[in-house]
Length: 298
Ligand SMILES: [Zn+2]
Picture (cartoon, rainbow, N blue to C red):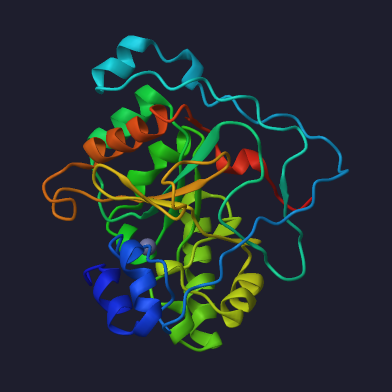
């Protein structure tokens, strides 16, 4: 399998001021704060009007509230507060047709953040055990090259209520390839994920965060109804923040990855994830499920 390392690819094509601006986020590899064409990707804004739609039933129930303190302690953690019930009127509403929105946070006043896990390279059985015990909601943006050796690894995580979303077949910088190839990347992953996991992804995350107007057209043609960016990206012990004050804000979407010791300087996936939860807990936030705040097209 081709080694998945966004750092060199993005960095080599980034220039000038954009490179300086991008240095901090480029260290995330998969993530990256600039697109590969050398200009920062536009800061996405949340979409979806506050609205007047039909209230839907809260879809919470991920069960963190019932996890005993001793179980948190076993993983070296303090208990996260139980997540509040998600708003009955979901703050982001997706439509079946028309341009796909891009968002990096969810408009909410609740002290919740959303954890996304990208690619799928590392398949540590201990992480499944951790998620079974802690019931922390995560959203998985899976890239076929990273997961095709073992699609089954992600099924226990899905069975816990976690959603699987689209992250391309081969992890290209989408804004460097033509529409036809972008469409192959999105539709190809969509088809495989739907077949393997029994449900069609609703959301798409572009590798390195890089996208252009053709990406939106490709996503629109292939099924996902929104492009999801992020506000923070998890490293090994700390997050990189886009906000200068380096603080979480309600509704922030956090980028993390399925990574193991070879990519984390010896740190395991579960240790990295525990560090992430500590950073969230110590700022007084808890983790909610992204899809509970996003209304799929009716
Ligand atoms: Zn990625």
